[in-house]
Image (cartoon, rainbow, N blue to C red; front, side):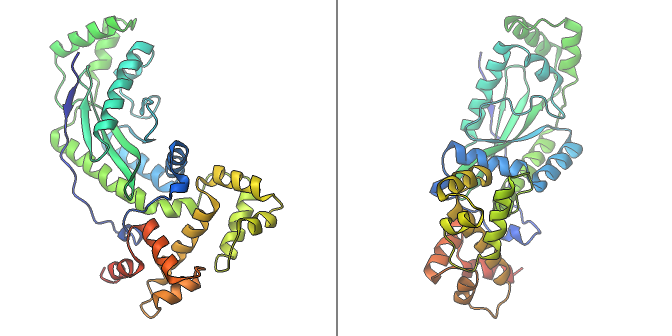
Length: 327
């Protein structure tokens, strides 16, 4: 059985209206790399208010299921979710059908590593993925799909009947037919527009991720909340892991492990992000020198500030300020 690939039209970069959107994609430090780091990043984004609001609005507008998944996950992205295709829900009940769908998902993500991509599965439904990047690092995919890009035919349905028999899906023909022909059909223009929206949102997620990390909304242990408060209160000072651990009555070893597990990044990266976030506001003031801002937010040298700022936001403080002041 041959799987059909159809490359989608790449979306152009969009200008976003928030101040944070004027920053470019941020980098993630090597300390948080790997599958655990990617999952923590994606979990933080999925649990953020901006993602939940976008997911709800996108679903209301398009009627399409949307999901954000880390690179390492080969799960069915839309199973059990709002707007899941009826036929896909039926097929997910059988492991052999799930295996076929997972193979399609794997191929899709491999093809979408650098740009938006669309793949059509054996039953004729199309799925699309848009890469979500933190600077030059791929952390996951925004995915939509389970749609027909042309009106399904009776001939196509007969092929689906044979496939379901092959996969051992015990569903009567009437139920199968209803599920198949109830699938959402989108035009090429609608599909391209959805991909463009996803591409812009992927860029926005990358830009907003620094704020997501320092403003986690999901429940966390009181000891970590207390540590965050301490870091924010003393961010302009020299902060050590031992100092913060002591403030919450924990050993440095256990505090380090617990903080990274809950926050998704290590202590040093978190402190850097807090300081960079404050510096973004100070850069709005053209009367402040960049060296003054660096020391004001807690960096001990201008060189270190410049290096960390560029690693997190993808550009130098000077370029970031110039971009802000020209808008």
